[in-house]
Image 1 (cartoon, rainbow, N blue to C red):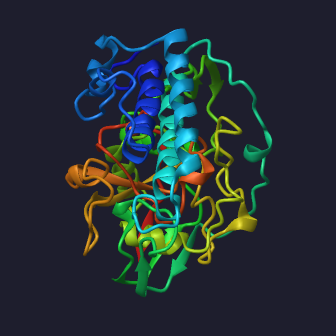
Image 2 (image 1 turned 45 degrees about the vertical axis):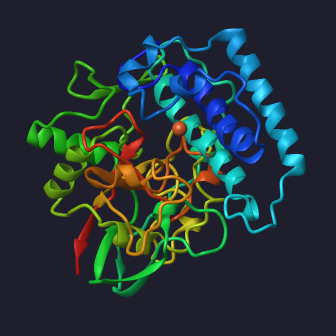
Length: 364
Ligand SMILES: [Fe+2]
């Protein structure tokens, strides 16, 4: 299975191992690369997605052997690593946290591809996280505005783009209590003739079916809409008489959300209905701010005031600018340890193979 908008799975796997070798074996351990030529193959910047399938990638047994060897060397190096010294890369295990997060972020990318695979069977599905009961509540919840703190504080692991924590002034606003649903999006499509989300098809009787991982099912109107691009999210919000939240608005509305009570970690291989996890609402009363679907924001991916690239400019800095829009909150396919309310994901506004949905806001 291969599509030019995603990487072949063997590229992701080789890249995960090669990135680990680069940082934890070569940089921390001071060892020579096992196979010097691999560095170029698995460099994400040098090899755009559309070209990755043409590379002489490691596959099958050879790939597994390389991954195993890198992991063994990483663990060897870890034995002697000085995690409480003053090397900022190692202090508090920063690089180790970063490499686990990197691997886990690629798990989600791989799921984007796997759900296009017709015969893919999830190894294990836990129905619990998607079967959480739905509680009634208001359509929108209010946020007072005033000064809010944005970003990650100095302690613990966070990416450079989440720092430094700083204060932003917000006008009062209201935000949808839950993410927008398939049902609402179908109404929008019916009224405006807009493009439906990726993976939707007409059922021939005026309704919709949705196909993922080879299974075609009637569209469930209660579930959050997923696989929409930024333009669809923005048009939907306007149609609803609302708008997309800015990043500070989103983060203020998400404050107090607990990632331990959220549909994450690809356990359920799908979303919980909009309005679930009401016992884990944010301080403002919004539910599912973490998990289920990534939420498009109105904001371009830009540096916070006082930003410093760490540990390398290719993680975030090279992507800053108006071409990328920020998504927040993680999806059912996001690993739990990756997500937090300050986490910033970014993508091109035309991307819809990601697990992206929308939640709207209104002034006042
Ligand atoms: Fe990567």
